[in-house]
Amino acid sequence: MKLPVPKDSYIAYYMEHLKDQETPALYDFWTALWTIGAAVGRECFIDRPRAPVFLNWYIIICAESGITRKSTAVSFARRVVEDVLDPSDLIVENKTTPEKLWAEMAERSEQIGKCHVVVNVSELVTFFGREGYSMGLPALFTDLYDCPERRVGGGSVSHGMLPITNPFVTLLSGSTEKWLVQAMNPTVIEGGFTSRCLFISSGQRKKLMPWPSESGAQLSNLKEWLMSVKEFARSQRRLTLSTEAMNYFATWYKTRKYSKDAYSRSFESREDGHVLRTAACVALADRRGVISQDDIELGIIAISVAKNSGQRLFRDGVFDTRMIDGIDKVREILLQAGKDGIKNNVLFHKTRYVMKAVEYNALLDTMTEYGAVRKWIVSPSGTRGGRPSTYYVATTKLLQPDIWKKITSLVGSGAPVVELEGSHDEPTASWLQEEPQEKTSPRISEETAFQIDFQDHPSPVDK
Image (cartoon, rainbow, N blue to C red):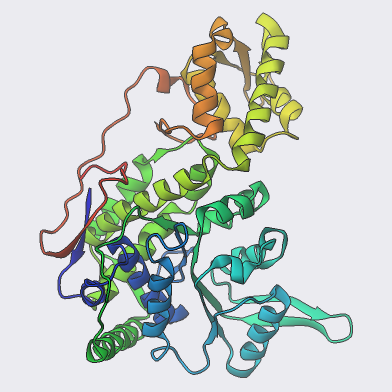
């Protein structure tokens, strides 16, 4: 699959500037989008009712040291934005603590009424620390992701709490895959930090360049172009979708498929925002204030690739080991319940300490699909009414090794995910009888300057 980039846009010019560098084109595309968001700040956003989408990105480029030049991609993005940012913007390039960062944001809030933070560090371990998952930075970034108008925290007993107003935090960093899997433990995943991040990986460099060259004039022109994008975005302030884009986005949102593994399910809770953010940056790169259908289609493809990248990264992590324990517990309880079965809320109550609700729903969906359990709904008796009760009973397939291996692979061990349509909050037996509907193939404009080859990164959207 190839990702088309519109001609004559800032993104195309950014990638043109890096065509003779070793960084993969995929890195060039995402760092270009990050520079747009970092420059624009919270002064421009997608005007979605009750849930506006700002252009702050949490992007982590994943590769082993020295393989695909992730640090080069991160540091180049910093060079592009450093002269375009406002003087009051805070650039973080080294390790910090939640308390120190909060204090600096509070100081800027008091002085200018906002706090714009641009985090650009070559290695995430430098920023979070080797035990970063046990500290407060992921929680802080999770809380500030949606750009709330005000937060109160930090401070001390003697000086009181420190308020921050109009925060905007954006992150670009690199990391080895091994450190990420160790650091992003189940608590961090379930806390929502990873669903807000894009984990971008590529298997090989764009080309081998023993002596890369760079034109200072081209870099200066690139900064001027980004400045013009920034000024245009702030003059627009509110971005909207065209009627065609709105209809396409709504159709995708209602018919998209949901995954079974925990990382993807968590990511999918934020997937719509990621798609809109991508589409908005693509439109702004072309100095357009109205997001087109082509922008939305490109966003859907790009974000699905990012999701697959994160899924591959976390599928063999510690999260899956814990999931296997929970899966075995559910199987044991179902077998003990025998042919009378067990009520859904009773089963969940017995397993609530070994798996979360989202994991429990995914497991029962999969077991139902493979016929390892039967589900039936009992209507309330009497005249007082009430909610129907759901029951599950184990079948003989639950004892078949090949069936059980497929279930544990899909839900727990991170094997390729089989996706089902609909919400996993209320699984339905219709999934066992109906074939998933195919999506309409996206219509991408042929006017493209770059084609990023995604053949190693399959996407659920057919090109």
